[in-house]
Length: 344
Image (tube, rainbow, N blue to C red):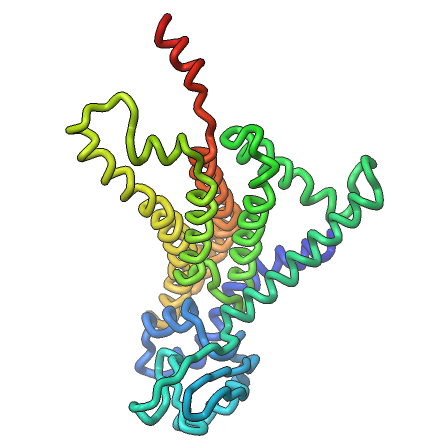
């Protein structure tokens, strides 16, 4: 485990900026180098998984293209079919933004392909299953013995999520919602780290992914909301009716702004980190100066180190806010105790 961890740390800290710089070398040789296009290419989704350019060799993993239309039914082929001068195959075309369109504009096609982000999601799911099934098996096998190996690494983190994030806001409801909170914490953290690897996909920097995570928190919060939660939203006690007319719509809007803030915060922070790193590396090719690399590469390495911290920080913030929203919805209000306090 120590060797694996050391190897991954080396890749995250050092190999990532170097490989990204190599990836852009071929583009920089041309006079019309476009840093904006290069950055958008790296942070956006794609129908194949591109890792790097080594000389004139493209390290690219083709992915399945899955299409459905009423006239042709289900069509499945590999994205390598588009690797030609026209980027066309079988009546379909990939545009400059890697969006797939039928060449016949009158046709309507549903694109359900395994894209780079989807493949990375599946990879992270496999890693999560392997890691936590092995941890669960270790607990069943060793009981209360001191943890070893991978179990000893993750146990303090799991206990921190339970004792310092979930319990303070959920109280006796912690055990009910802890599986969800642990899932989103490690899902976000693992995908943030995978996105820092050379050629990694920008999964948590994709707003489609963050909006799904926010919607799940929204559903868990409001479907578990008790009568006290909805009562305070729809009919706040002890407030004049004229104030309720203003306050209730604001409270209802707040139900939707909470998941919106979760979505934007994770998406913006992760995407911004990738853009900054790529922008620093792009300076080398904009100025075409070796001396600029002496400044840009150390800053890019520093940003990679900072992104390691941001990766777990964003997982913590998303999990903490989700726990707070759920806690406010399931909190039991002791009316008798409150009345007793008011009487005194």
